Amino acid sequence: MEHFQIAIDGPSGSGKSTLARSVAQKLGILYLDTGAMYRACGLYAVDNNVSTKDESAISELMDSIDIEIVFVNGAQKVFLNKADVTDRIRLPGISQAASDVSRFRIVRERMVDMQRQIAGEKNVVLDGRDIGSYVLPNADFKFFLTADIRERAKRRLEEMLSKGVHDMTIEEVMADLEYRDEQDSNRAFAPLKKTSDAIEIDTTANTPQETLLALLGCLPKSILENAHDKDIL
Ligand code: DC
Image (cartoon, rainbow, N blue to C red):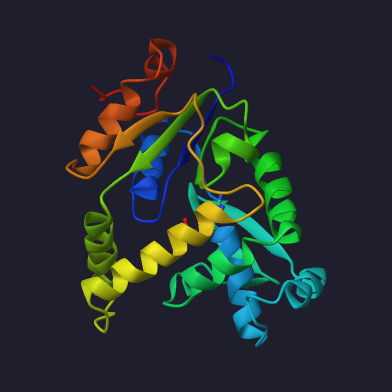
């Protein structure tokens, strides 16, 4: 297969980015984390003290936003009006801000244009909420990840602890995830959705390696034979 696209969708904490990163590494293809782009929009609103729920204020803000995605040795960096915000978009509070602003059509249209442009140039794996359903409806391979809410919250909490954030309980993380999933699944424009042609992988009881093998097992031999890292199965 000459040129191919892999779409990975699912709710927060289902393991999308870990999976997409390892797939990209194994196959030697580009990984685009689309959530990072909405996070940059959310951060811009927060930095400018604009309510992330105010559609007309956010629309106005979109006139002065410049988001650039740069890949350095395969690692994605995000620039917001020329400043590197790769780390700041992961700060607590920005997840919710990203979910809020991602509901608005103008924000999505701008980000989706960039995503399609990047995905059209190379073999890619994209992760997000609407990749298979809206951004790349003709993607060659579509996956939809799920996991129990408690397991997802546990993963998020571990991630936060590893970054030195110690001030949330598992119940609080669960409540945040539930709120965000609900908002992402019920927005009017391009909501989180499993398409009928997506392969569902429940990652609750899986190690990252098991989930990777489940995905690679769905790809044709022609792709696996051309993989960057041949030590696959
Ligand atoms: O994947 P993430 O947690 O970094 O995404 C942050 C928010 O961005 C998420 O709550 C919803 C939004 N998002 C989206 O609407 N569509 C995408 N393709 C990716 C993320």
